[in-house]
Length: 145
Image 1: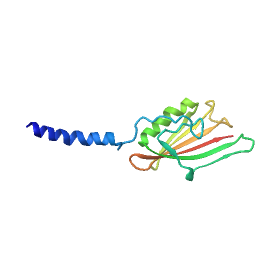
Image 2: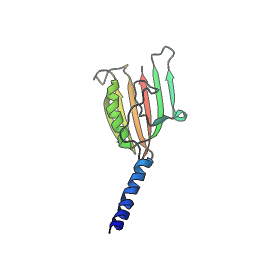
Image 3: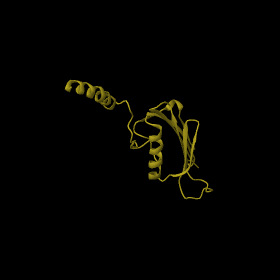
Image 4: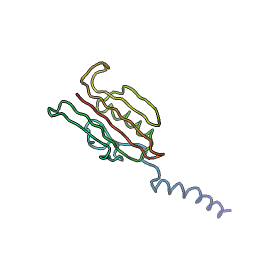
């Protein structure tokens, strides 16, 4: 009886230990990198910049800036969404709109006051794409005029 219990214990516990220790699942609580390419827009530490799909522009006088940056990483789609909803306000961003469509989540942020008609305020659109169960891509479009 003891031998049967031990075999069943290993049959249940061993796969769980392998999955946890082996890193099958991504980190559930995402933390921001020290400084991303866009200083006031956080990126999870587990995500890597994708230069092939990214672009940016800054006017000669420095008053206009446009960034379209892409990142790839291993995280659950819902964890990335929670990360941005939690971290963007830390850098002064206000969530304006939250849209789900076509397997992606788009979060619209603005800086400054609460007046939605105000002009010349920084905006940031974060789009989260689920590539598969654990792989996620992030597109960050930030404008400032």
